[in-house]
Length: 176
Image (cartoon, rainbow, N blue to C red):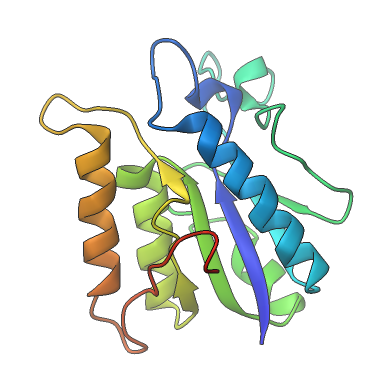
């Protein structure tokens, strides 16, 4: 079964002094290593980028739309633009995965409690075998919870998620 690594919203506009992300540097290093392994195994690496409206930091005309410079993007990697939290909704992702004969997804990125969560749930609902590396996503502290607790909570939810194929496999990036 061919794998795809889905890297959600790891864009300059999501990582600023105004929105510090939990363990951002460590996450970038882990994602680079994970992407290298997926590519070496003949898998697909997909960078999903949020496309905001004019005036938004994530608008394609803004520097915030760009992938973080420390993430290695290779010529064979795909890029998918999205306009909602769900990387599948009104995007080419489903068709791209089908064309590449992908049956297993590794979902990673930013932000755990919004776009990563929605994409994990959407992948499970579509019947994909889904891996959600417990150390493969990040978020910011929120008024009601700190980032570490949000991440731990979502890892527990995804592992026990009820879907036709069961929950996501939650393990470390190293174990993937």
